Image (cartoon, rainbow, N blue to C red; front, side, top):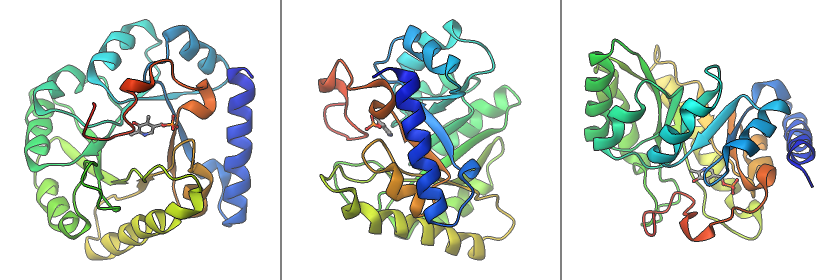
Length: 240
Ligand SMILES: *Cc1c(COP(=O)(O)O)cnc(C)c1O
């Protein structure tokens, strides 16, 4: 099946899941994950209506950026090394993977240099897997309070990566926990714009939408299996 047809199916399933949860399907933003996906396929996706792309590697984002129209929204969804912030700071719409104080400071510093306000999500390691990046849930509140003091960087919500399991029902509790955590944080920290929950990938986006995701990151369900699975680390620390 082609990209257009795959995309139609994904959006149909998003709409179904949203309705099931009593939500407006229009409230769910689709980020098409394009790691290892060539630019011509991205153009095809754009022609079919995709407006936002997610990359997990800085190098790939930087290489593709000049080859696509300026109104494309770029999302950095993978682990970001501090020394690479400078390459993407003026190219990204949203960084989904803020996971350390050091990285927050560097984003703030580089954003100030260029008079930018950079929007980020805090990556939370809900599942507690050692192989995953992200803050432990217990540290998130104080972390957000600290980042709120930094100029040039704005926390807009939370992101998590669920473990890859055969039955997506198995990760429903993880999505539910992130949703509840966001609700609690909004009460604890009123005035902070913690609007976004980035959760759900090809395997589990339906469940994520049912549990309140308003950003989903979907790759292979749109573009098919990636050509280079060895480098497809799904946000894991090892092998990346
Ligand atoms: C690869 C990746 C995705 C998308 O994975 P698919 O299973 O292809 O939908 C989403 N989020 C992150 C962080 C990824 O690395």
